[in-house]
Length: 93
Image 1 (tube, rainbow, N blue to C red):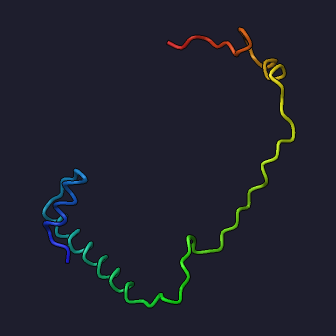
Image 2: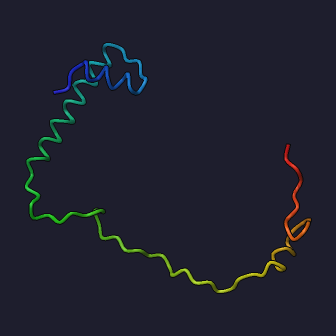
Image 3: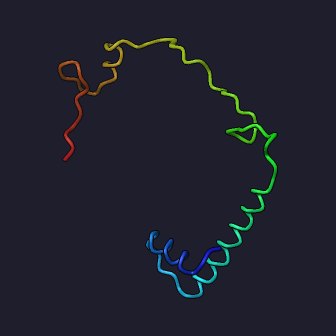
């Protein structure tokens, strides 16, 4: 059972300032959530296989295949300015 002290402790950890009304409200709400979780614990799941997703998940990404690799010279043709084989950019202050 959740108490007002529990709510105050969690609020302190989260650095929240709660009014007395909010403390009472959250005590009730958190208690209700835990009651619902207890209800779910009563469900027999012994014949249910563990799963990572609610639906079957298939990797739909394509194979990573290099089709064309540009040479350094081709890449440097795009450089607005170049020095010693590197892109030269304006200094940032």
